[in-house]
Image (cartoon, rainbow, N blue to C red):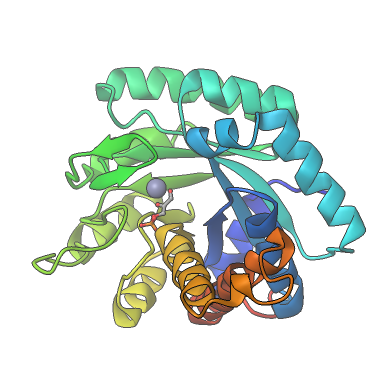
Length: 287
Ligand code: G3H
Ligand code: ZN
């Protein structure tokens, strides 16, 4: 059964580790992530962007697929199904469809509007027992049409949003979606520290988890990050493994063109990436 992300993230924050959010795109992605979480005995959050939700036909299809897998793969670790960077309308659709968690990304609105819209969703999520992530500042780069300037969050604005009673808070701290450029200046730990001082026990979320050096991940966890989002890294691993299969001509040997064979190396590569991240984030055996 899907669960809210609240309990797993509060445990993570108290235990000084982070739970990974891994974005899904299709059946192979979802199955690889769920099987790895079970094998690692780790809680996990399945992230669905609005674009990926559309690609998978719609949110109800996603809920049906994930619930079916939880049952038929005998997944017993805590799993949350979470809308990633959602609009207000997208959040309402996911609440209706049966997601267990949502992110309302109101970071592009003036803070008053972000507060007002987030507040409405806090009330709805509390009634439904769902977890809610909010965002302040912005994540640089682009993810599925969501473009951010990358400005660091104002800690006072973070406090205003945290005080509404959201479950977890994503703040821009110099993090970027996609690959980090050569001249990236790194995470702003000063900003993160100020946010954690003002928001106390609230689990903080680090977006743009692809390619952040290990020492920065560990330091971010020390400063209150309890959820780390990874998307691009699984895509890169899937693409590289699939390319290797095709370039080796394996799709031309025997029944190698069978989609169940063609997609298998990519699915295995996703498993390896997710396992590596769960080990780095410290969530193994924390289910
Ligand atoms: O919301 C999802 C993420 O922040 C993932 O970022 O694609 O850079 O790993 P990434
Ligand atoms: Zn993100």
